[in-house]
Length: 109
Image (cartoon, rainbow, N blue to C red; front, side, top):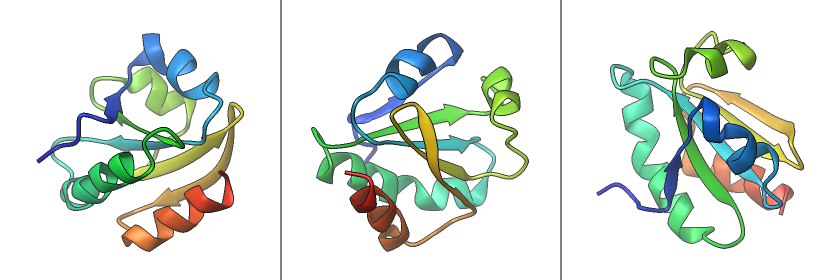
């Protein structure tokens, strides 16, 4: 079941929700047709619940938000970027175990 805490961001909401957020923000650049993206979706849902109030988890559909995909030079998905203070502090491409995301978030809390 998808978490209600995972925020789907668009070109219009990205700056406010991600770049101006005071908490670390994990952003998943994904697409509906991407198998590995679907594999990590439950992990991201768990992280959104576990880090609620301390970090944010967002998703960007690269098919619907091509300008954002171009802005961040997304070549392969899933591409998971961790932002802190409006800057990218970590980039992970491809499906990863939950622990990889936990370590990235914990290092930036």
